[in-house]
Amino acid sequence: MICSRKTSKNELTRLCANPDGSVTVDTTGKAPGRGAYICTGGGCYKKGLNRGRLEYVLRTKMDQDNWERILSEMSAPNDLMP
Image (cartoon, rainbow, N blue to C red):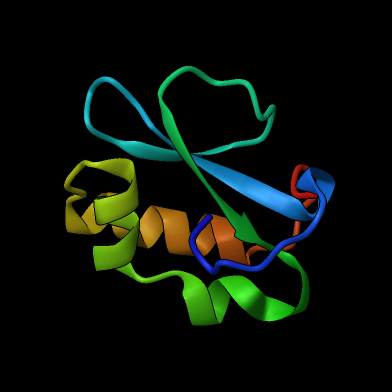
């Protein structure tokens, strides 16, 4: 878990490192690949989502486009996030 907070799984969003090296928001929680969880409530992702930390946890490198897409998906309110 990125922010080290303990909470139930339904209050977390899973980020997944895909085999092609990209990182995506896993809305199902079951996508294949190495995953990392981050809180979505209360803006915790804004404090805890750090590119270097995420790359370390997922054991991958992200390009700038992928990083910006993750940030926009995490900050955009939608029905897919828990």
